[in-house]
Length: 118
Image 1: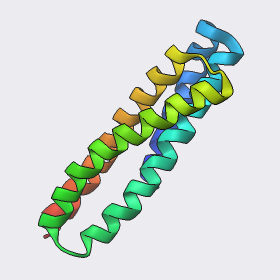
Image 2: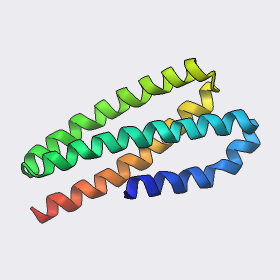
Image 3: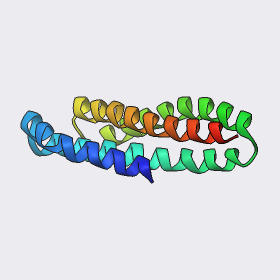
């Protein structure tokens, strides 16, 4: 839940600068990037919660694995969205990278909290 809130705050903070740089088409690309990263993060979070029940070591290994999977899936979905919806390439992938960074920080904080309890 914190990931969605953090990426939404980042999106709200970036709407105006994105609008200034590329107007409506860039904002559409930003919203597509937000959707891609949020859905990918939700799927990975469900996987990580399931692994957390199996122990801290398994959770840490699953987190490392899921980070690379998340990058591959986000980039693949970004390319599909760029091709299918004719979105602007630069804003789309800039925002995918920014939202991924916010997502990674939030999930890393969550992982550290879980591992400290164990």
